[in-house]
Image (cartoon, rainbow, N blue to C red):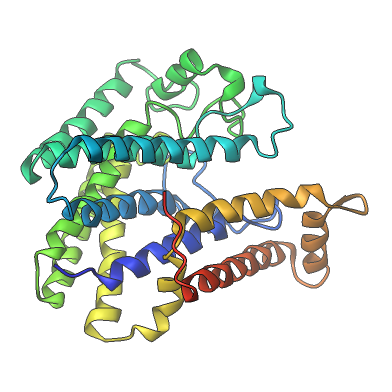
Length: 358
């Protein structure tokens, strides 16, 4: 079994996109494709997080392959420990720089979802064979839809959905994201359940292509899976709206389709056309994904520590760009410059063979 360089490029692309969409110069001036859909529907930005879940599942395949996918006490402890640490890091990022009122601390977030989903996905792939993973995934997606529908009318509305109700009951309104106008967390507790399947898709797709010696056959298989995912997702959309905030079952399948097609593109460029050099920057970016994501978050959040004039260094940097360029382009350029800067950080670590893992 050989490791696919295309998967490393895919991981690098995902990290670069996460930084790009999370680091605008101003949230008031962002191009629509770099924003999440307001509710139902999909934008390119809505693909980034499920892509991240996909590569989490892919990485699991190679990690557990070394243990022949056997669940042993030491492996179970390591899985739980890693999931807990990822969750803890995400929670600490939420409350950084630790000066806010604990009564307003948001509990859930991107890394918290990854940590929880990773633990459950890991135990599923270690407990079940391939067929069992598929059956479990289907049961999760069907069961999640049935749970959402259990509230009756308004099951897929912002105000009445079950995800919001569970978070309000368990976490409380003050510990939930408020950016939707009402307390609602797009990384809620209940909606983390279908995110497990996003990771399982990454695991199983990696298993499938790793069993194929011919790269062209791998590309064709990825295209087939991608098209199936898109078609099934669009058909389900008539019944189950594609919705990132609720991480609906149709959203899981639809975005998995895009992940397969994106990976197929990298297989074509790298393994078939041998164009590894043009995508080398992405390979570098993917070597320390979790560390670079955390670093980018802390770095940008720390701008608030440095006052400049009537604002902070963040405002100063954006306003300087906006004095030269249109505001939306200046905001985009601000994000792009940070993507470049954190690539250099990745390159510095890569050249010194420093790989920071949990």
